Length: 167
Image (cartoon, rainbow, N blue to C red; front, side, top):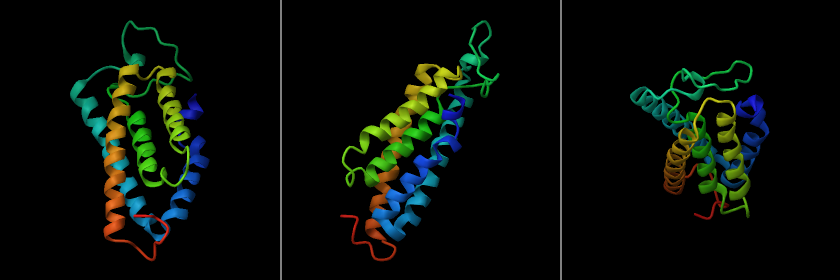
């Protein structure tokens, strides 16, 4: 679970996402990378602001609560809501908006991927299920908004010839 929660473990998935997006959007990948970076920045920083406002301790930081730790990993002090869940669900829904319509059944493995990543945070004892659920909801909203804004931008300001996007 420690490996599954980290970024390098999922590099093949990210490379697959990149390949699928480049295949469909060609030079508009530049717009997509810009929107993806802004989306993750917003998702991650918003969770940090909420954590600082709520001050809800993580299970691993809660005095009197016995949590089995893996490799003594405790995460930060506060856990509501999960930045990992928010980031992964924002990326999942961003990808679904951008390329889900081109690939049949794309939705199912992408959602399962995001759910597995979110679950690792509970397994590691650094989030309560409510932290994950809230992060999932926020991430879905951010990803849908960013995906639709990105598609609108690509339709309005395409980079290069882009006959394959069906806008």
